Length: 345
Image 1 (cartoon, one colour):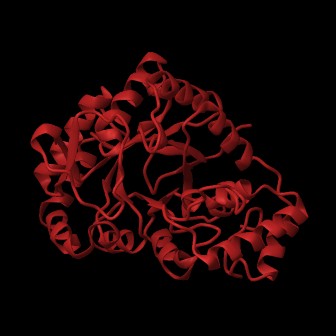
Image 2 (cartoon, rainbow, N blue to C red; image 1 turned 135 degrees about the horizontal axis):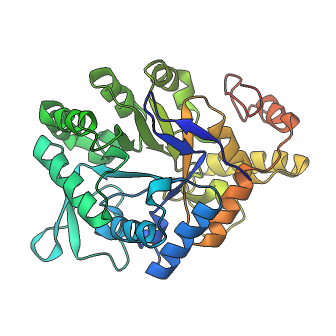
Image 3 (cartoon, rainbow, N blue to C red; image 1 turned 90 degrees about the horizontal axis):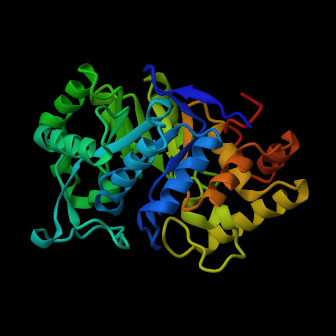
């Protein structure tokens, strides 16, 4: 099937409705070989995906190194959009203390580096140049400031906000105005920080993970409307809430936002599954198409650790879902009445 394309903000950057996220390919909970990485990237391209996202944090440089090499070997660079992130500078693991974070990701077989936070002008420029070297690219389409805000930094968030305001914005503006990047934004796990930055500095887009899903509707109330008015496109990540909306409630080891699934969430997903069964709709397809239906959303970044998972994602976004299914979810109070729905925009 042919995937749709939408622009990021007012820029000339156009992204396919599906993007490939590289977290699962970078050693997140399982070891993935370079051959598997390249095979997955190749399958994504052949399936119509033209947007690939990575970050220095993912495998401590492995995602960037592997992605750049795969695009170069397969001669795909000129046909795709690449985003990476800034706000972290990688330093030798033998001389750097590991960060203590709320998510505590343990990468399997990462490169021999550890991340340090730096949202200053010098830090963002250093991070960007290092990313260029790891990717082997002379330009990067989209640069996202990674994990700035309370969701990640907690009580230290104001310290890093001050770094970004004092000089980090200047680095982003310089990179964009000189053409080193075509679009700038945030890569975060919260919507509030995106709105806050958009009020202070002109960003084009934001990768927001897990905040707008079949289970989370808070951005509908005001945040997404403001981002639309400000021409800030949403790159939606984490739309399965780390697993439960991909596997359903009967899978073993199912998680919600990387933790144990609360009982009310289990009950809600079971209710959604009942409607899915009634209309012969797969849960992943419903989760993906619901998020993509919002006019603020330009693309869905979907992680995959194999070519087979890429094919599943492409099939899900193209699955035919009857309008009656969405109306049933609303009538059961499983979706708010104000939610944009596929085919109703």
